[in-house]
Length: 196
Image 1 (cartoon, rainbow, N blue to C red):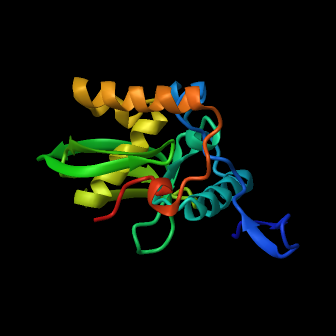
Image 2 (cartoon, one colour; image 1 turned 180 degrees about the vertical axis):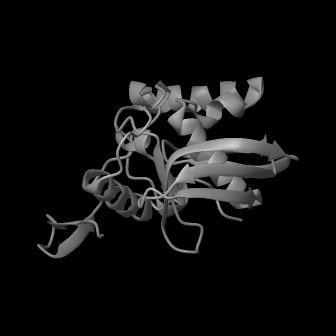
């Protein structure tokens, strides 16, 4: 489960390239609700492996299938306990509030303090078809909510207040008018959720 090898054009050395390109704000795929997964098979396992390689390459801590252009209800994540995959997740309960600086791989370079429920109960299936039930809080709960939003075609911009949203849209519009972006440095590129 690694990234796809490729030759670096400058010096011919072998480097690692992510299997997918992250879809960014403005791509219509990010605004569509993903479809339920009917069958967990080898193709889905391969998709998950490629998504994990892409997530680690960015680097992020979570990645939903729509962010790589696949309209399936699946996301991958790793909050430091090893890679995990959740298929057809559902949030069945939430509680409390937690303010945290949140970013997104599909909206690179921007982050905002957003209030979300502090704890959640999520049910899903793993790649073996087993049902999993997770009680999550703080960072893990936020990660699940963020990725679940992607499966419903919701971007974090929709959780911003009016002033934050206007600022974010102005920055995104200015970037679009400036043409193709220059390479972002590591601090600007870090997406998913910003770790403290």
